[in-house]
Amino acid sequence: MRKFLISMLMGALLVSAIPMIAGQSVEDEAAIRKVVEQLYAALNKKDIKAAFALCDENFENYPGTLKGREANEKAWEPIFATRFKDVQYKQFEEIGIQFITPNVAIYKDRYDFSGALDKEGNTMPSTKWSNAHVLLKKDGKWRYATMIQWAQ
Image 1 (cartoon, helix red, strand yellow):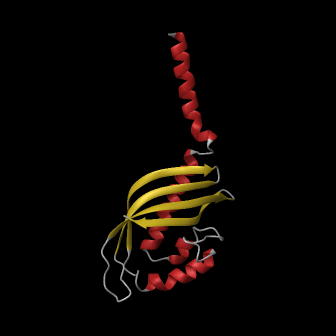
Image 2 (tube, rainbow, N blue to C red; image 1 turned 180 degrees about the horizontal axis):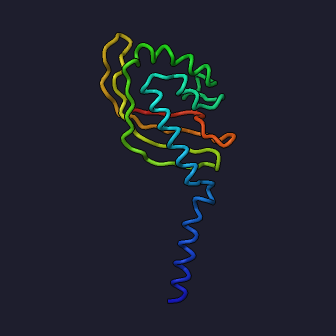
Image 3 (tube, rainbow, N blue to C red; image 1 turned 30 degrees about the horizontal axis):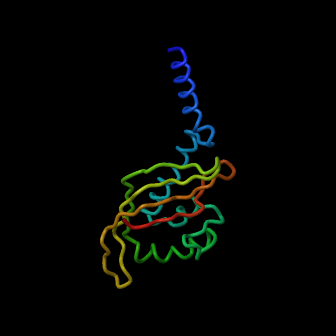
């Protein structure tokens, strides 16, 4: 019985240490969630400058056709001023945070996307999307490196 209790205690200690081993902390998770929340809030306000202020200067879109925070911001400004002027993002599920290294994480979630217009100006149907937000930590701050999205 004593060996069993010692084994259980050692197992509990190991499991509780896994986040620290992975470089994961409660503070990092909270900071990542806050950055994601700020992104959706900025996009819903159509504040593209605030949205891209959350990105690393080397932010790259997926599939890599736009490189750099400024290039991405410049490309998205006219879209949010026209076709996306009434767009709303509404997160409905957090899937989780995966730390690749202590300074690189993937935040996975699902959200509703509504209010977009197609190229002819017609309202597009609301769609559900999955998202993999790739963030990196520089100088103590979490920033977007890229984002991968796909429709459900």
